[in-house]
Length: 157
Picture (cartoon, rainbow, N blue to C red):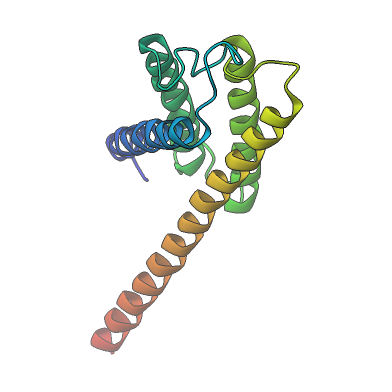
């Protein structure tokens, strides 16, 4: 991403996909786990679904994660830092933001160790999938650009 317009487009796409995937993952978790409302006072405190304020919280969380993704994926701000280090920093910040939201909004009760382990496991799984997708996309883009460069060089000679 070379300019602000591209960064904003990336942010909007990232926000849309993060929010939709987050809501879908939480909906599936709610359907699969089905914890009664009186046992957990977290994100699924209504029993079998997400409350309206929970959806807003997930949207704000998605916005922050998307902003971090945009900042670290953009060449505007961190062009001198290697992509691997950007992703490491992004991973750490994403975990910190997610844990912060889970604590502040009581998505997961503080004393429920099993729920925290599951949360971190799913977070690592989801982030790992996104990271793998990004690496695959980067490799495909690299191949495409190298082919275009070789085609350009062969036409020039």
